[in-house]
Each structure stands twice: as C-alpha cells, then as structure tokens.
Image 1 (cartoon, rainbow, N blue to C red):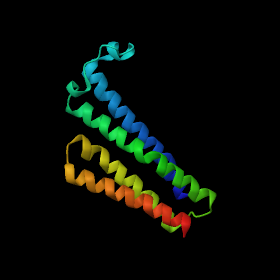
Image 2 (cartoon, one colour):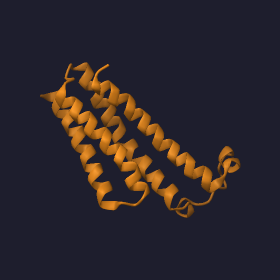
Image 3 (cartoon, rainbow, N blue to C red):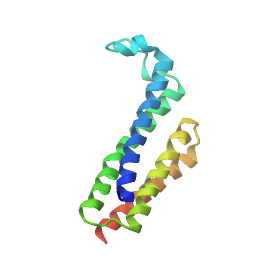
Length: 132
C-alpha cells in the first residue's frame, strides 16, 4: 500500500471521528431519546451549546475539503504520481486536519486558521504532484 493510500484511509477515518464528535455532543445535549426520534422538536441550533456548535462547524469544514483531498489522492494513484512530493502533500493535509478539530473545539482561533491554510497547502502539493 502506498503512503497516499494509507493517508486516504486515515482521512476517511478522520472524517468519521468528526462525525462521532458531533454525535457525542448531540447525545450529551439532547439525550438518546430525542435523537432517536424524527428530531422535529429539538432546540434551535443557536441554543445548542458552544461545543456542539463548534463540532458541527468543524465537521462542515472537513466535509468541504474532503472531496478535494480524496479526489486528489485517487488521481495520484491513477496517474502514477505517487512519490515523495505526493506523500508529503498527503501527510501535510492529514496532519493539519487532525490538528484542526481540537483547535476548533477549544476555540483556538488563529492556530485553527493556520491549520486550515496548512491543509490547503497539502492539497496544493498534491495538485503539483499530479500535474508535474
């Protein structure tokens, strides 16, 4: 398995962790009964609490870049571009995204933004690996 394939699988796992974090804070906020229902009577999103709201936004954010990252990692494989540059880009993206979640949950604004930009640099590196 190539490094890029490993990061592909780990990135999917990370997206699942984001989902579990949201589920954890939802369960803590609402309880299992209301979550098992059609959820028609849950409180308004602006009253959910800070950690659930942050977890939702972090989850939304990874879902915005996830298709790009997975698509690029697939393109690396299909074009035979796997190598040191692609592996570096893959790890840069993944590690920045790992850092992003706790930074967002704990409200570390500037470092969170820097982690986001670093993840974009990882994606740009993957683009370079594909087209170079």
